[in-house]
Length: 463
Image (cartoon, rainbow, N blue to C red; front, top):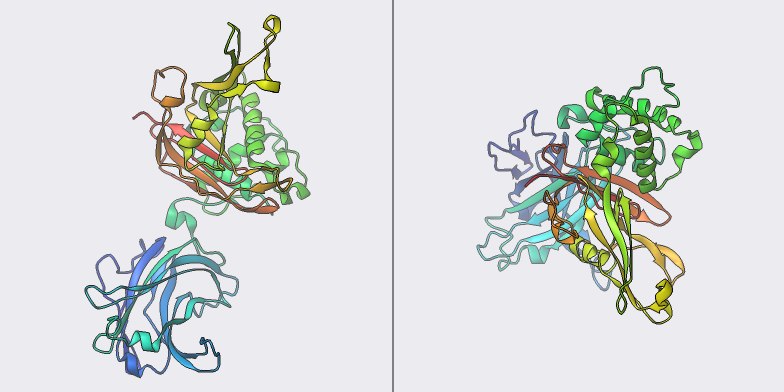
């Protein structure tokens, strides 16, 4: 994949292995690591480019040159420095292409105990900015310092690690390279598209949607019929799928498509419409069977024999993120009891005002568990809603048995299936979803976390 080239007296060499050889199968890979060796570095006069390494079907190269920098306190003394950049798709004749890439540039030390010089980078590459890196990666004096070990036999080696998203505006065949296709964005429908992809890969639900009788339905008003079409196209089409007929069936006008709705509310409305359409059919009860759990809200007096309980159903669980390290800490807080005392005592009827404990207990978790992380909450100090970007850990597999009131007949073990992520703030942003496409209703479980309105989907899996 990486050949040897010569630029004046400087040669570029990249070690090959069987895994590095370019093939139709791996040029579409998501990430890669490659090296570039420049000889006669002390004589370098012009810029040099490594041979291409293909990621997402685009050529990525390491660009190295020498520059005179004024990056000194006096800003008047020229200082010689080595510049290193990562270049993407240079020379493309397509003006509108973009590709977001992140990774690392590393100047290797040849000494066994030497430390490599590493610098992170991330950039949206496009035709006007097809390279990104560091004009002053290292000063010439530090580069030539023999104690650092960066130069050996008048040569240096730079290693690049690239992770790239699927490009836009270039010939990228999603179906060919990944086996799946995307949904067209109508303007601000990224939240809907992310959720639809998640539901599409919930195979049990998709199969049930296909079985809904829609013969004779008005295609412009039937949500079930429009969703069937979207799922069918996602499964069999080779090009991105339009969702205009689906949003039209919701009763949305064109303007509504350019408004970002609440993804949690959208999910509940969609499932409610599907549940209504499934009544008196062979798939009746599919939605509650898959998504509905049960919990008991209780109030128990501490000093008298009086208590109150109420059984409730839920389709998702809203977990607090602020001040929590991971999903288990959030569940622990969710089932913690609140003491009703002082001015907040419980009115126990004939027993009068009593101290009491208030809380909830989980009775049954559903086969597919939706977790909604509360990243958007009211802040009393600023008197506004803000987004909490706190680090929050979730796991590929979780065991929720300890949060059930009674020992479950089948273990409440879940496997992560999808993560819906919101980037941005309270005023707007963008949704993306990460999905395990190999998951299905027989053996996998879905999970998802996210920003303001993000939900988590987990589908129970026998372990």
